[in-house]
Length: 132
Length: 194
Image 1 (cartoon, rainbow over the protein chains, first blue to last red):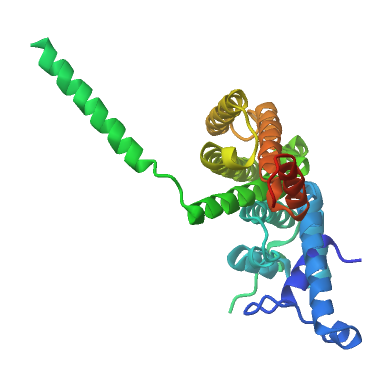
Image 2 (image 1 turned 30 degrees about the horizontal axis):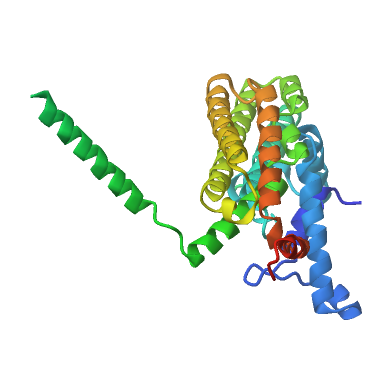
């Protein structure tokens, strides 16, 4: 079962940034384009609420679970998340700016905590992000 | 010598009053509709975005502070406190802005829609003023003492704002589908047709 953070990122990825509509071919063929879009938007909002109501400790756990699930190099992951901040564009449409800001702030701190933990426990050469 | 000065002072005061009365023009129908929409938006923002108890508890959660302290990194503690302070200040400022919007609505328009007697209007004005002052005090405490320096006042401010929000919602209830029926019923008692 994916954690709310994983759901949030996944569902945000199904959204067309130009139209704000969600697209999922499997669901659209089984139901209808509108019904699928509405259901995905509901799930997105729910994932956002779940993540926002998580404590900082739970957010760190979710971030760690999400990162290990991806199977990418931790150094690369931290570098990308610190620079691109993908969570900032993953909020559902119509979210109150303060709530979006709060989630972003929590994830920023969670990322710093997880990064410091990995830096302390992993050898430098394994942790380092790949150089071009 | 004193009399001319007095006359000039009275004249200036009258001019100032005239200027103020010109500034306070009666809002037209368009302005009234906009004020209603703004007030309705402020109520919704407060009720769904800023005042839910879960959000207030999350922003001022000491559980998060304990967790960060247990991590043992001064740098992360500093980052966490700075972030929470920023969010807490943003939260109070947003509440303040919405409350000002609701107060403007009550001052200018609510008497046309809600049946408020003068005593109730004065009491409401005082309550709005008190809440605005409390928001200012809370902002100052957050700046001086950090995000965990005024948690009780933050909870009280949220409860106070929530109560005034309910009062405003009642004044605006005629805008909701169920509310129009109530207005029609109330008007029928006065012999008016809606």
